[in-house]
Image 1 (spheres, helix red, strand yellow):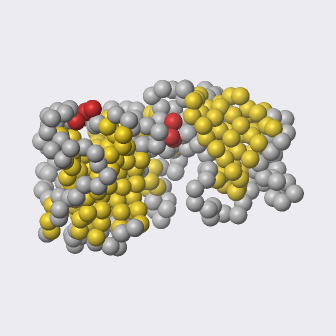
Image 2 (cartoon, one colour):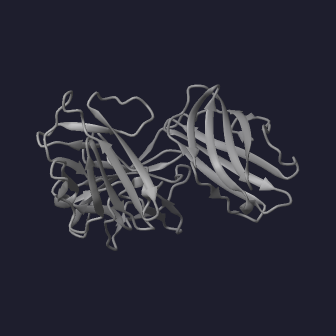
Image 3 (cartoon, helix red, strand yellow):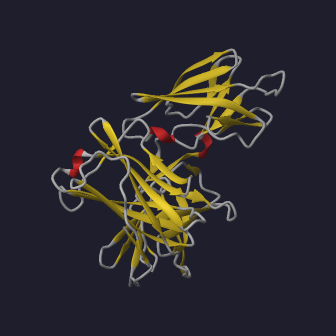
Length: 359
């Protein structure tokens, strides 16, 4: 494994693969915004697509700083150059303070998970961001969005888009997953799915990271396409439940919610999910009672930051997700019916052939 300015050995741990069969390597680039780790898996005498990726981890000493794990699933490796080699990359937003790190990879070979560890050091690039001011408004199915600027760093480019406060559609989770930037030679930079976020300081401004960047060369022309945008009518972007009468009072006209049950202080219902829709997007972070009092939903893990929370759970089944949440103990923390759960997910999109010249 070679990192800019350093060279390190890449020892293998806990592996029963013959040494001449599987090798793994890594490289990275880091700046003030984060790091991108490029990694590869190469075999000498087997098809790399027969292996599966179980996890990727970044460790600083004894502390894990980043983890991607496929939980009960595994992701097949597919070759990029030939049947012997797989190459991938992982963007990590927070850089650990320590310069001595380890990159760990778990590969599934049949029923066994083989673990590899690559220790390395790195040097962060000290550079200045390039800003391309755009300030162009586009209309997509009657909704208005302003492309404000591009911020370009060595490891990534970020597109900043402002949604018009008068829009009638609410942007949902992962709204700009199909955004794409193209230069005059047809080179493309697409979004990092699921990484768009709202800038809390700038209000209605979204920041959408793109895969990699063009920091080290100067494109003569750049155009932006939007693809499908996840959005739904604001007036329908919630469900309203009366826990006493045990019924949905309001929900979207094209409902995907059913099987509402209220048993003592436990509320549950089913969300129908199309096979092409990401089940991980289904869920709620809180509900609001009739007096605008918020109750955050705690699904386990870290201790909640709020005192007014209730426990919740999600269970995935073929074609549907079951949501359960406990109601507050009325003797401790009262709530007033009905309760409202705002929708940040829903199988609804807007789309129009819009191309914006940004440079």
